[in-house]
Image 1 (cartoon, helix red, strand yellow):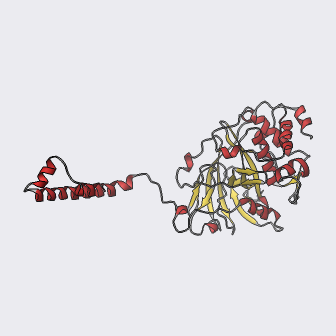
Image 2 (cartoon, rainbow, N blue to C red; image 1 turned 30 degrees about the horizontal axis):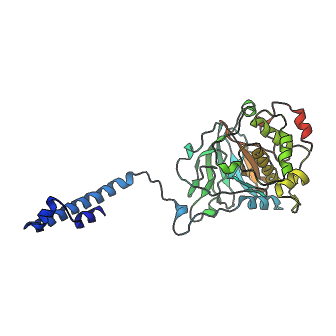
Length: 373
């Protein structure tokens, strides 16, 4: 565009006088030569510099052919697997220290009175190791998938590297790893891979003193439109807890108490919304209900929360590896605390014990009495 302006624009001053003189032809020729030289220099510079500009890789999920990736609802798959009569193998994994670990596929930040859901992801292929900086213990895992198709890669949270064939990208907000190739829905079939993660593992003292974090997406703090009695009950459950960390522990303790019952045959119809009905009336449900309830009660107390979906630890086999089946598919809440990052909790009874760091260091008899509502 600049060259065209140079060639066609009417000049002023000395150029104008030269144009009207007998040497006008030479003037135009000189101007054309200068324009050609500048054009060659500009194109040459662009070609030379383009590979050096850090534009990143072409994003396959933004290709003009197929448009943005449409991710399936992980809660639908979870419900289907938990209700499936037959229990089929999904994967086996090993850890160097022989310790079990949760494998997470995706996190659901959006929460309504009827449960948790996905939000739009902004996928990247680089910088995973720098995407999350909260402390934890280093965990490596070697995984062998069975003949199970999925667009999500099961990895420990918070994953910071993985080695798997195929095309993969990650969401910086949730660290969910998503297949992006042409046959992405089949990417995990028979897949063997390894992953490294920094798994949250705060001390009891750290969690007991923790305050709610603020530097997160605002969607993780939105309180769903639930019955007012859920808010009242939450205030009673946390009682005289002095910190946000203590409040979270009190909520988990309440949901794991004998006031609630684990059942995959949760009522399908209720007079209230799903979360209110579970917390106030039925108190029967499975992991999705318990996780959604803890997310809601945490947000009422100002603690950011989201739902993680994946697999619990599975069963140890004779050779030391762990086998994970379709009935091990699970959902659990992650709460965000300043300096600790996203911390997993386990409010669902009869599935797994609570994490060691969630054992209450303080006692609150008054809160126990009030939570009997």
